[in-house]
Image (cartoon, rainbow over all chains, first blue to last red; front, side, top):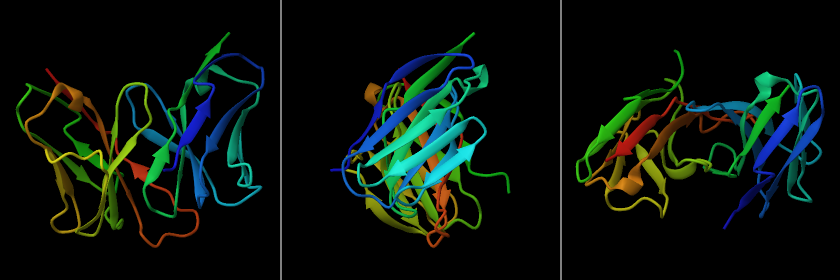
Length: 110
Length: 116
């Protein structure tokens, strides 16, 4: 059974500092997704990582994938308040069901 | 097309009642998925359709849950004899089956169910 683990589950960040969060998964999979969720809202797609060594960047967020280690990292550069949200990684095949981690709640404080 | 639409946004029901939720996917998407999300957890897969065919159901989906997608367009998820443990956000997502390698779903805003 595919398991997806995220850590830490909660991270308090200081503005303008850099942080990295992690996503591990238990079995080989086609692709890895990162989603953002604001309280009471649905999921917003951030990144889809398709192959070993894939790196994608959008603004202050950069995601990478190491399929050999079954690990994805999400790096946050110079955190700002707008990044406060819960971030989920999910693993699955092309357009098949996704298995999600429990999510990491990020809170940026001044 | 404004994305995946779910109705209602919120539903409060008494234990034992039946409820039905609706999802309208992006019109050209032939795959439709239902997920359930409880507080502090990630979404859990319930079932998915390709066109009108239900291709997979999770073991989480008890006999009280049924989903349909009668004409391969909108879908309904019905819960019979609701229990307090059914309280959750029910998320619908859609995608193309033969999408480019980018893949990816579009999620709806969800229906929040509270069973009292």
